[in-house]
Length: 215
Image (cartoon, one colour):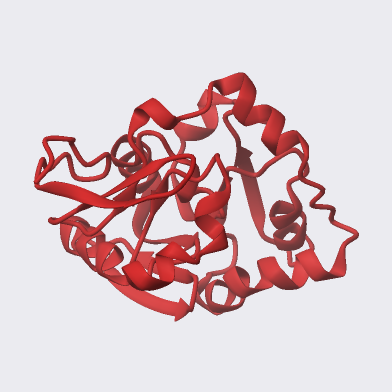
């Protein structure tokens, strides 16, 4: 048993999970999150340098298909005139563009590329976080903040690859990205849904939707 607090639920019921040549990984026994201890985090400058290497363009049909896996289960659930936020939009907010093409109003926030604090003080009918939560150093704070920004009945869409088991984790390329520090499993999302009183929909192998209670 470790005394290292879980960054998602703050439980100290955590234990060593795995070690590779670069980092240690622990797992929370309460919410099942697998996480990297803070001592292995990159600095903000190092982290941004990694993101600057990404080439995710709105002209890239493959990248649009990738993002559409998050949009496909969301779009039928959106009412006319709804307003959303793309959290962690990156240097080119492709998801915002895709939604605007469908007549949906979308604001953006990104700690490095669109750091507008006012966007986190507004209320939204939906929030998308595609390939974001695995980067969060403070997932409890950040996810609770996003949840508080949702209107009653609103949707939070999270896209992130999920932990299956330890054997798969040892061979998993996803853990090798130095900016990936939190790894969610299906059980972790069930835990989140229970904490928030949310409806959970496992829409795809790496897409979940959480609906805020209407009242």
